[in-house]
Length: 76
Image (cartoon, rainbow, N blue to C red; front, side, top):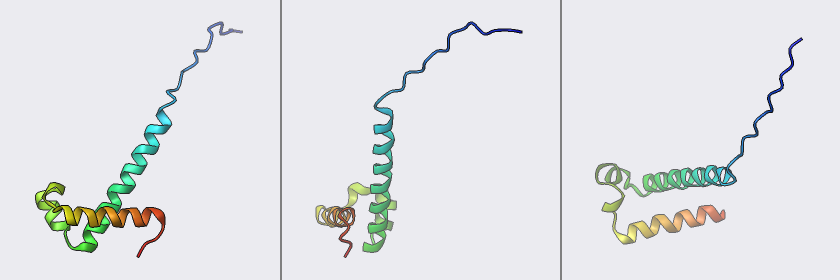
């Protein structure tokens, strides 16, 4: 009968690993919300063609305000 005398190595987990996963999920959620709101505002083609930087500050603010409302649960 063989015995395994090797000590098992403990793998240290990075404590920030779960934080990163949560941040990635949050970033994905916000990115999905941005795209959904852009579709509702009718500017999705502009974003796809020219990028987010092509938006005026006013439109960007509308998107940000709607994201804030939805994250709070006050979807209007």
